Length: 444
Image 1 (cartoon, rainbow, N blue to C red):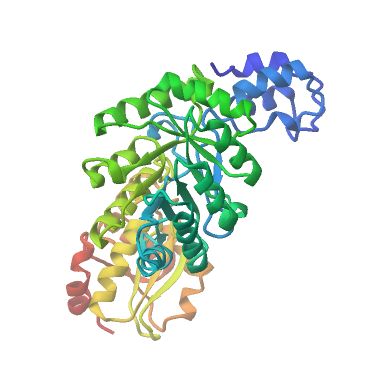
Image 2: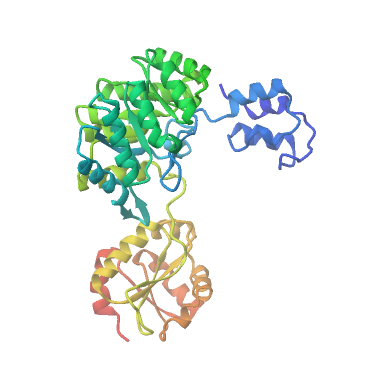
């Protein structure tokens, strides 16, 4: 179990030397208890204290990095069972699977799809993470050639899926320096796979029939010198995956079974319902998800779900406050004020673009709150609007002094007029009606 701040404080030297960056040892202890500090920051800890603290203050789920360069990603380092308790930090990597029995053209097509396909949602670019290559042929040469084809096509994180150490060794000659994920070590091939993972510095998936065998396998692999592990739960059904994944997460975050404190691997392509498996994997703790190439609609659904689950529920997605242009507005263009909650921004922007009327958007800082919430909480006020007009030099952008505010901000209209000297027009509550509103109400 994790130590409380006072228990940690008892292990500290109590010098209040400030060399850790905190004013007192108690403050440092509180940060250690919350996972917000590293025990190595204290230069006076003895070995016994380091041993105890190392087991209780490190992240309950180990951080594992896959690949190198701009497309690399990290998984693990999670602290909670439910995202509303705190947040989930590292979104699962979703990788498309190809087989070494496919033609080079087919392999290049899937690789190019992963490299180039993306879509933007609420200002965030969403994309898939890499390629999983399966040694379906059983041939080391075919496996090696498939890996080489992917490597020559794109610089993407890879998963090498084979049970044959010879095939794995041949594939690693092409990509071993790029930290591919190796899948998968079992008790039967553990020695060979651990040796290759250690030689090339690669993370390793371990696979077993049940949780107890997984725990033993993690001990064996770490004893062999491989620390970056992922757990393949080998579920025979979606229900089995949920039960095992949830059990492992519970044991890990409570530190009841430290040997299970590793990210979870899921091969959704072998499940009966792949789309459902992907969704469950995203929601229930899978850190690396393998699937066959998805249709455009399914891809967008999966990436949107991942974005939603791994958005901090305590911190709304925000836009930077400022002046945004829709089209190429002139001095006489309308100005619409709204909040910096990203969903509000992109919804309004979309409807404004559909009107084909150039205009300005004045985005004020309500700390990511929606219009109605910001008004109720006092985050949206006449002084904020006044200060924003001045800060962003809105008066230099337009020749008029008219400001359109959201319908839900109508109680502030009079106060905004008095504070700013601008004439205020109250817009519709529903952004979908903004086109009709501008056509009927905006007159110079």
